[in-house]
Image (cartoon, rainbow, N blue to C red):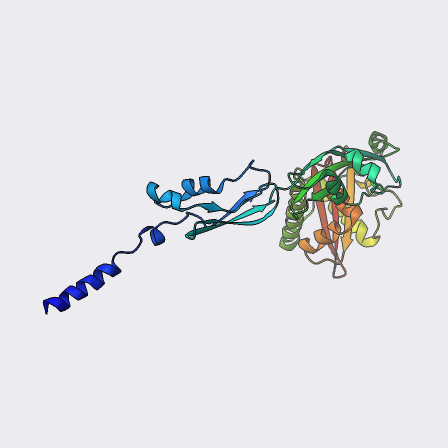
Length: 329
C-alpha cells in the first residue's frame, strides 16, 4: 500500500513541476502598430524588456530576439524571441496629408477650369508623412466653380495619399461682378414703399420652414461656414408674397418683369447683398434642400460666406407646393 502511494506521489509531483516561464511569461501585446516615420527605429529586444509579463531577469537572456523591423517601409514584420514568444509589427500610414489653400478671385461669367497652373495657385502648402509631393499634386482636386453668381463661394477641395487617407478643405472663391450692389440699393431707395401685410401660416408650413433652415445650416456647418439666422419678421412676410409671385410665374423675374430682389425694396426693406432659390413640386424640406444642393447655382447661394440671414416662403398652388428661399447680408 505504501509503495503504491509513493508511486502516485511521484507522478503527481512530476505533473506539478513544469518549466514555469514556458506558459506564465508572455508579451502584453502580440501585435503592435507603428505609424511610418513616427520613430527612428524599433529595437525588438528593448520592446521585450519593456512589455513582458514577469520574465525573471535570469531568464531574459533565453529570449533572443530574431527579426528586423524597418520603420521607414510599410508592411508587416515578424519578430520571435527564442522559440517561446512571437510579435507581429505592422508599419502603416494612418496620417492624412496637410493642406492649406489660398483664396481665388475670378470675374463673373469667366470661363474656368481646374488646370495645373490654377491648382498650383490655390495650394499654399501640401505635404504628407509617406506620399511624395508630386503624387499629392496629382491627387489634389476641387469641386467645379460656377462663375455665373457674384459674391464669395465656398468650394470643397481634397487630397488623398497612397494609403487612402483624405484631407478636405474649403476654398474661398470670390466671383467679382461688373456692377456693384450699392447701385442696386440706390435704385431701390427711389421706389414707392408699400405696406407689408400680415402673414398667417398653418402648422405644416411653419414646420417645413424651420426644417429648411435647419437643413441649410447643417450643410453650411459641414463646409465650415457660419449658420444663417432665420428671419420670421418683415422679410419673412415679403418672401411669402414672393412665393405667391413664383406660383404665378416660375422665374427669378417677377410677373411685372422686374428682378426678384426688387420686391424687398418695394416694401422698404434693404440689404447688402441678396440671393434667391426657388423650387416647386417638392413635398418636404429635406427634398427641396437636397434638390437645391444638387444644383450648382442653388448650392452656391446656400454656401455663400457673406450671407447672414435667410427667409423662406411656402405656398400651395393647385395642390403643388412652391418654395422660395431668400438670402441677405
